[in-house]
Structure formats: structure tokens, C-alpha cells
Image (cartoon, rainbow, N blue to C red; front, top):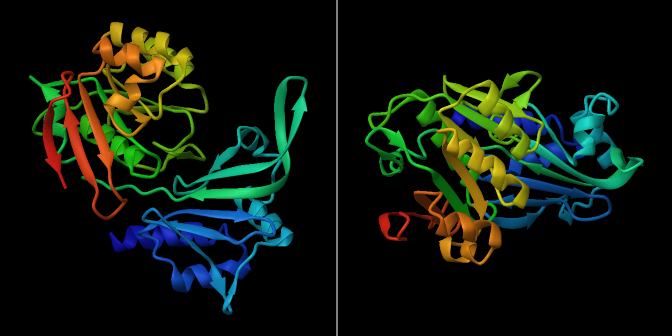
Length: 314
């Protein structure tokens, strides 16, 4: 565990401006660190276990300069922004370790198509946390007679639904005492699940997982069903109307489904047309609801289609 967080620390430090590194090396707990927000002429902000704090150096609140931003972008793009132009045009870039960097700045268009982004004014570095075993106590409720049940993980941002989905994929792929290993097709639209970096999957998604990244979820689901014949499909953060036909196509093709969605609970999702149809139609057989404070009093509840709670885990 300690070795893994030391590796995370080094991966993050090498993409930060030199002036910031000393502070981060001495004062930041990389096990708790969730994100770093850098904005030109604004305080550098950290989020640790859901709580925000400002970077203070030499007894002053550290405000990022234009030079800091330029240096950081150069490290992230390895001094070749042209080589990463396509990824940056989508508003984010995945770096070594699966950490995702979001950008804000001036958009350059080629007709209706976004060509690239320049004059970067803001960065959001989201630190990837791989927590193997976090789904250990849940998997038994998601399997019936050896069959993976269609499952939707629900939580507000920042409570670990992507981390949980990642471990579920690993366990479904490798197999557990509750299920035999299954082939899993992972649509990694924002490259946060497998976090492919230079052709290598950065996170352990199991021995039977195939990752398709850099495409929309609806495109990816259709492609995987046709090309890889997965037994299970996994996607992060569903919620667009365009995705419904692809989800139905995958389910009707015999694929089991693992997904996440933003929300507080099942009832709240029912208020959204996209989810109302799917919940009332009992497309999903299990709902995992995460609530509480990251790393502290976090609660996990599992519900069936009748919204009966099957388990409460503190």
C-alpha cells in the first residue's frame, strides 16, 4: 500500500511546477489527495477526503502564475502539445498512473469541430486511486446463480463510484467464490477506468477485460458487442439519451451491465427522464448507493428492483 502511494506521489510531483513540488512533497498526504486545481493568478486548491484547502508556502497563500501554468502544461504534454492536441481538444488528458488532467482555456475551432485548446488558464488534476478489494463485501449481492446482475452505482461526485466500479470489473473479470471469471468489455470514454497510457492499461481490470477508450459510450458499447463479444459491459457515468439504444442493444445481446451515475439515491434518479424509463422498466437489478464523506463515515447500501435494502455497510 505504502509503495503504491509513493509511486502516485512521484507521478504527480513530476507534472507540477518546480515551485510547488517542495510544498506537495512535505505537506500533502497522497493517500487522501483527490484533486489539485491550478488557476492563473488564483490560489492553488487541494481536495483531500472531500475537504478543500489552500496551498500555503512561506506563510502566504500560493497563487499560480502564468509561468507556473506554462511549466505544468509542458510537463503534462512532455513538451509536445502538438502530439497531444487531439486529447486536449476533448478537454482532458490522461497521464502516467491514470491521473486525469482537465483543461480550461481558449478553444480553437475548425468549422464546427474543436481542433485544439490554447492559452490554458485552469487545470484540474484528478488523482487516480486504485483500491483493490473495495468491492469484496458487495460482489455476493450482485450475483445470482452465478450470473452477474445488471448493476448501477449511484453517488454524488467524489465519493468513489468510479473506484468501486473499477474493482467490480477486476473481480468479475478474474472470478470470485461467487462467480466464474467473465469477459468484460470496458468503455473508457474519459480514460478513468483502465486509464490507458502509451498503450498500457494503468489500472488492474482483471485478466479477461478489454478496454476501448477515446470514444463515446454509445459508440463503444456497440463496437464491443460486435467485435469482442463480451459477457459483461462496464461504463462510467451514463446519463445521455443517445446512450439508451446502445444500452438496450447490449442487454438484448445477452451482455450483463455494470455502470455508474451521478445522483443521491434511486428516487432522485427517477425524476430524470433517462433513468425513469430504465428504473421503472427494471433494466437494472441492483442499485449500489454511496453516501457520506470520503474516507470517513461513508455508507454503502444495496437495493433490489423493489428498492428493498439488502445490505448496509459502514
